[in-house]
Amino acid sequence: MGTIRVNKLGKAYKQYGSRWSRFAEWTLPFLGMRHRLKWVIEDISFQLAPGEAVGIIGTNGAGKSTLLKLITGTTQPTSGSVQMTGRVAALLELGMGFHPDFTGRQNAYMAGQLIGLGIDDITALMPEIEAFADIGDYIDQPVRVYSSGMQMRLAFSVATARRPDILIVDEALSVGDAYFQHKSFERIREYRKLGTTLLIVSHDRAAIQSICDRAILLDGGRLAKQGRPEEVMDYYNAMLAERGNETVVQSATADGRTQTSSGTGEATVTDIWLENEVGEQVEMVNVGAPVTLHVRARVNAALPKLVLGYLIKDRLGQDMYGTNTYHMEQVLTDLRAGEEVVFRFAFPLNLGPGSYSITTALTSTDTHLADNYEWRDLAFLFIVMNMNRKLFVGSNWIEPSVEVLR
Image 1 (cartoon, helix red, strand yellow):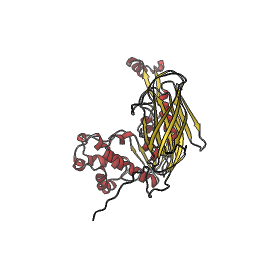
Image 2 (image 1 turned 45 degrees about the horizontal axis):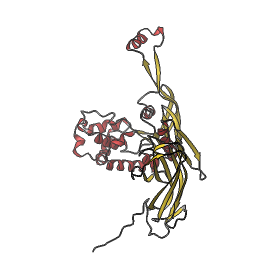
Image 3 (image 1 turned 90 degrees about the horizontal axis):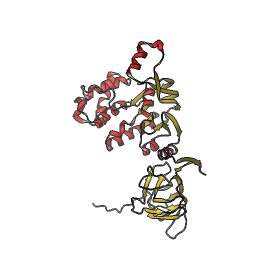
Image 4 (image 1 turned 90 degrees about the vertical axis):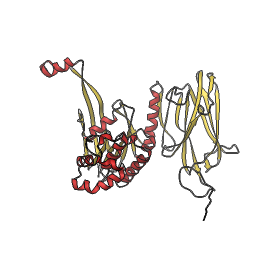
């Protein structure tokens, strides 16, 4: 079983004022240091238990790829340590270790040996590697003629040809086509069920929340937050908006979940409720029943424009449906401080049975990253039950009509 233990890990690079400073430090070391340290990663500590899946998120430059390189040993740390047990397979930079003038088959043999496979093992696994990569005759062509997607296909196929104890994946999978991404994540899920420990970097919220037990947020080279994927992803989205000097607040709900809100407070949601077709407020709804979502907002400062968006999520925090009044061409303009507005959205609730939440966003455009007046996760919770529909599975109710011809 694979385990990872990261203890006070840090990586710094030397920065010199000029090339002459570098030369002087090399040739005249007795005169003292002429550089300063630029910390890319600093004081990172966490651990992965056997079979656990952890996702790493953060903005570009937050230190995610550097952290994976330190963990896999391709870069040496300035401080701290990493301890791992079990056989490791890693997919970091796209095609890392591939020689452009060698064929895909030759590179597969070299890459396989780098992760601890013997020549006989690779030969036995080669039919499976070829089938999973699905690059056809290109397997015997030089890698320099490969597209980035083909390199990723081959690299992933080799790295996962035999189930590793630990699988570490950077954002390489994002360059593949939709079919291969689906196939790759299915293999990752299969290995997870068999006990593989997973460490993955991805900007794909759905992937992180569906695969991972826990998420880690890096910000400026430091560990900003870790916890349940939904909680950390919500905080991350709020943090992106916070760059505009808003506040981010997290609080516990009655059912133990963490609610994240952020924004300038120039407009706020004061009430939100769901009504059935006869105007009764409900928190439990039948599959496919017509409902109306009501959102009351208060304007706290004069605003040139106001847009309300809502997003329905399932219990894992995965997006079911979202829209806003910008896309629906219902943007409000010239709002006065103290004004109240009620938004009503009527729709059939064609969701599968389960518990759901509604996220609200008050902005000036189609995204909360521009003017984030308020973003609130878990603003309203409701339950969908199958009271009188035919049995079905899935997150959506799209019952078909059936015609059978013999």
